[in-house]
Amino acid sequence: MSAHAPLIECRHYPDRVLSDRHDFQQLLLGRGGMVELDVGGRGLRVGPGVLAPVPSGETHHYLAPGANDILVLDLPVAWCQALGVEGIFENERARGYRAPASLVEAAPAPGAGVEALARWLSRLQHALDEGRGRPLPAPRLRLLQLLPRLRGELAHPWRVKEMAALCHLSEAVFARQFRELLGVPPAVWLRRERLALARQLLVTRTRSGSAMALSEVALVCGFHDAAHFSRVFREAHDVSPGAWRRQAATATHNRSESYKT
View 1 (cartoon, rainbow, N blue to C red):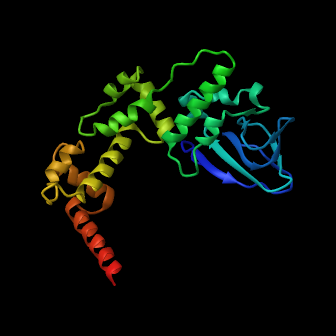
View 2: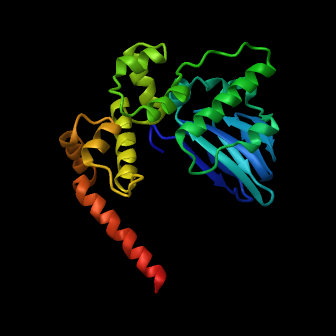
View 3: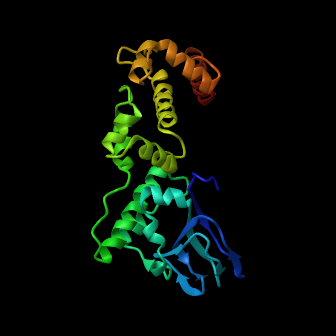
């Protein structure tokens, strides 16, 4: 597992004892069947709807007496700290807990993006804190609210200083926590989002049926001009935006023709 990349998997444990110890946080959610789990000498039966935290560094053992279906989240320690959900793995919670039905139903599936996972874990942390009478903590990083705004305003010339201010953080703290949560610096994330929108617009027709000019695509996506757009696009895709558009049109035409035959 990458130091910056959470992993979501469905696992089926065998009917023999397995032992493990790892340097990341792990969270198990029972979906079907049952797994016996021992964490640091504390036993726990992980059945449907039961959440079992396995703190980083804890030796643990598994045994599944029958068929089982377990959702497993492998979470880097620094990532959990940046999101502010390390409380999920506190020692007093090591015996596990039954999650609210709404959270079980909303649990992220394998392949879910890091933002969906972060939102779900934040909800879980808040639900646990409410149950213990704790006041809800202010989010350490308001990225979950900021990211949709960034995507919706890609034409804006975003700077780290401005993004950090919206999250009420210093530039250094914002940049560090952004990378911890998303695995890349803010500038790299923005470039990816702008290129993704550009690819979409390159194959989109206007109401008149014409394609958008490259200069227009560049400005809508937040590039300085067509030349800047072309340079960044070529660095990412090894072809110019115009060539990519022609290749995409040809591929679409070929698929259309294959359906007719």
